[in-house]
Amino acid sequence: MDNLRERLAGVRERMARAAERARRDPAGITLLAVTKVFPAAAIREAYEQGLREFGENYVQEFERKAPEVGGLAGARFHLIGHLQSNKCRKAAEIFQSIQTVDSPKLARRLNEAGPALDVMLEVKLSEEDAKSGAEAEALPELIEAVRGCANLRLLGLMTMPPWSDDPEASRPYFRRLRELAERHGLGGLSMGMSHDLETAIEEGSTCVRVGTALFGKRKRE
Ligand SMILES: *Cc1c(COP(=O)(O)O)cnc(C)c1O
Image (cartoon, rainbow, N blue to C red; front, side):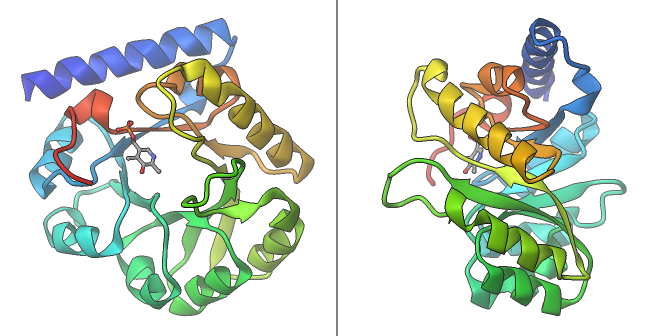
């Protein structure tokens, strides 16, 4: 617990310094605590430390934790991992936000599931095969589809650059995401993780997704 408190203070400090360098108001940057692989107890601890926004990667994994944490007042849960269309109904039930919408079909499925959801569009900006996300060229059609969905509130774009331990390697991807968001009139930018959150904030991130720097190394993925 003390450990988490210290790590959280460290992350907030890093965010504040980066915001200052970029002359941005830190209040405009959400810290999303990424709790994949960690048990529901980790979410509770983080909640007790004042965190309210949580990111999970897998519908099934969060389905197991949700009964323990779904009722925490003011807590919001974001899906940040790839969503299969056959899991849309369940996802819409346990998450308040889906950051990984990458096709019109997925948008329609989520819309039909019922509850109102905040959504972000995951954009694929690198050539890596394994990555999910929509191609930049497909965004106009995808945005139009999402805007036609009464239950979906489109907030912005999300991306995950290819892994590199050099945070500067992420910068061109973050910059490109910001340009795409501006071009399409979207304000939200979910980008930046434990190792490159400063770069992301300098490039305009409104939501950094931080796991390791808060909870320590994950044992499995
Ligand atoms: C795991 C994960 C994170 C957090 O990564 P850390 O390096 O542990 O901060 C952020 N975003 C996505 C999409 C992830 O899968």
